[in-house]
Length: 101
Image (spheres, rainbow, N blue to C red):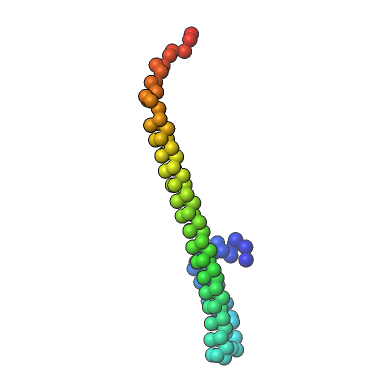
């Protein structure tokens, strides 16, 4: 199950699942079909729950990183303002000089 399986179109995935589902029916009784179906759904629920938790943790980490960057920027802006206030007069820009020829 490499990248090929995960890159199949959704219609083909549905068709494959349908064929596998009918192939698994075989000579199973209704109780056995019910058990097998519930077992496979449980596997799916475990995969979905794990993926959802991983995504949540990744989103929280990313949000925390953004917040940290925003705080760093705010701190730097405050430091710049404090440094500008320490200057007695704003620096006078020097006139542009023509390059010697």
